[in-house]
Image (tube, rainbow, N blue to C red; front, side, top):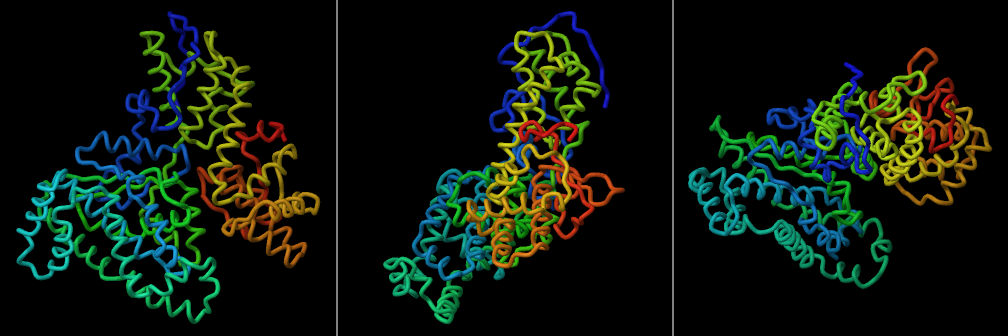
Length: 551
């Protein structure tokens, strides 16, 4: 990493509005495009021959920035606005709630919704469909080419239903398909549906045999020929441009799956179905559907889908785990600082060491700051912005200000970390409260003593009602069958979880280095954490948890 100490002939005074951009890519237009660091992930995601469909990583790692750059650099791009899908219509449907209540796996139905939406969106993108006339033209082109192929009849029949409606809004698409399923289920099982709507808790009164019989009847309807027909539509679309080596590239982008775009009752089922169905779009050679998916959201999908046999490993080839190195973040920071000062202060090139004091104690100042991040753009941008804010009216950022900024930065990071993972691991907030002020290094035996771990267990049992948090589930199991061994198992599970979310590092053996989830293996199973293992709290949390730097 090249480092230079430059002296500017035009001394600067830092203004109150000095910052190197917004930590959220959606609100960072001023800096994002002019200072974009050409991360290798961008080329991989844009490459249609690459199987990587999911830009995966933690919040703040740059997923949205990558999707925005793909849109900027590509000619044929469509964004799926999740709020336009009317999926709350699905969540609030009495019929869908009935099917969920009898434990019918709706994965294939949700895959049908996604496949339909994405097929129609590709047709709109491919044929520039924006009204009913263009919609009919698109169908006529497809019919003209494939009408003589008997194998394409089912696909053409499916598309014929939408011949004049390729251009209608996505929410209408979703409602129409859902209403078809609703009317068929209602006709077949109307008496049971009425009982469900009229009597709270009706599904719980059903015997296992009755529920199984209802599920069997409903499954035949929901898992209908729709999905088969859509697979044939995909085959047809793949053949349309398949022989044209000069055909354009098309991208459909999906972001913000972590936001409240649909009721949580079905959100993770829908995300699972999206993951399941996207592989089939690989057959359309000139189309790539790219999805930004946060690590914690994927973790919750896995937790919610454990009963359905969803295996993360089956999809590893489709996930691009985005990571940054210290040198890459250095280049990003240099670009942004230079852009800020050339735009607001000086015509000269101004870089990090022109603004920041070179040392904090005996350590290089950039190294000091980067060690307090999870190697994410959001972290270092946030830390630098806090420093610049505290240094307003001065001509540089001193080491005193860097240390002062660390307190606010650490508090923000602890809060953000808790919010990021509380959906999957709501018990971590209690863990942070109990770790606070106790020192920065632990062995499993250090916290499996009754004073610490029993306090933790009782608080989790009292405050956490989650059915998916593995710690909460283990706590309930321990309280049913107490044993010293289970106290130690609880400590190991806690270490594994804190490591998984990035709250610290693990040294699995005395002669091994500390591992960190954000740059090494992402998961260390509790079984791999022996009595000799050590957990160290990440430096970015030291100030917020009142931990001495040398603890």
